[in-house]
Image 1 (cartoon, rainbow, N blue to C red):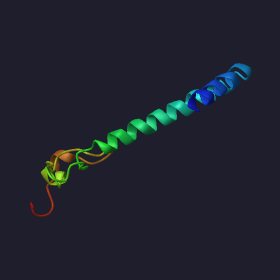
Image 2 (image 1 turned 90 degrees about the vertical axis):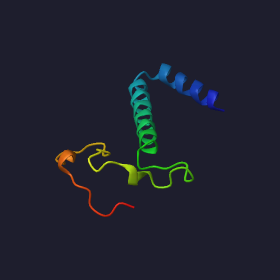
Image 3 (image 1 turned 180 degrees about the vertical axis):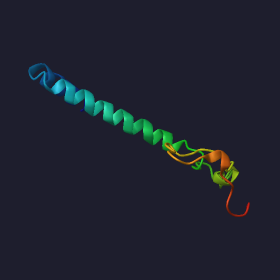
Image 4 (image 1 turned 180 degrees about the horizontal axis):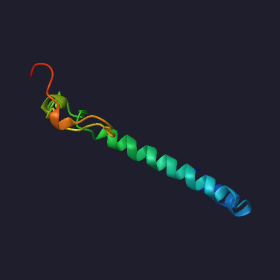
Length: 85
């Protein structure tokens, strides 16, 4: 089934060369979205095994930068708020 879809897309690209950039950017967007989802799934605040480490976010240092982009936050001067559980 997928082989026929790929073959049909290749035939369309041969007949209409203007579709090649569209296919390229669609694949680039899908690849980038997939890599970002993998990055989110492997983050320090995500737990996949609840028996060995049920709350991994409690073991993070308060100065740990876990955001993808931190524009104006200085994590070195940040103090932990709340009790240690």
